[in-house]
Length: 272
Ligand code: KIV
Image (cartoon, rainbow, N blue to C red; front, top):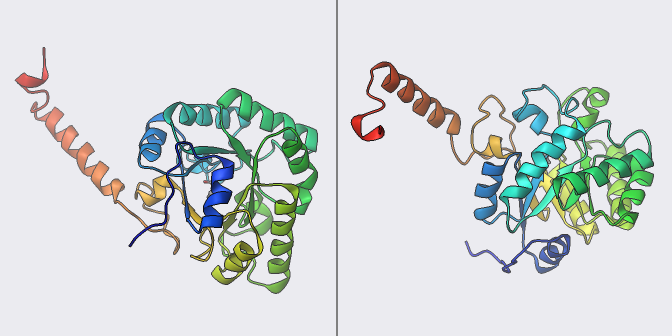
């Protein structure tokens, strides 16, 4: 299939808006470390998200809530050292922006100054309007995140599809329009009905990047460890696995253990 694609030497927040206007879909993946970021960037990804999903896939927590601002800065600075071309978006972690707009701005500034990331993402709409305004006023680009917002998991109780009912769908649309009006450069929509996601994407000029939000949006994001098949116990319907790294890696580790035990490794050629 031919793919509409303009060559960008560096992807900026402006490039993403331009991609939407030109009908070019936006590709986004997560990364949390230097080596992975380098591979993902070299492959030509448009956006790397240093997601607070690091709390799950890197640290093994059940939710995204425990990860700290210092830990996000550590992950983000490692990613920034690995990339040449893509835009780097960094999640503001739970507890670093919800209490008041001044704290939100301080957290966003720490991310920008200490990690070298290019923009931040936070979860929510109207409730965090003042924080978003303050961060934007400081010249920091903001990506919104609506639908399933994992930092509020204890309020929702489950990770099931959001905004299936009309009232919640209406609020989501209002929040999306608000985020655009405030000046956010893009929006992530997580786990919402495809029809609603398409309606939101059509109503906005800023790009809507979906995860479990169907094909009618302006781009897609997946957690890299999931799409590589490293996290084989996580199987949502929206996830396409491009590799089965869990099996591949297990095979490689088993072979290494066998080689060490049997004295096959190292061979004469593998020593000095
Ligand atoms: O933290 C993350 O990886 C995310 C994506 C699921 C969008 O927010």
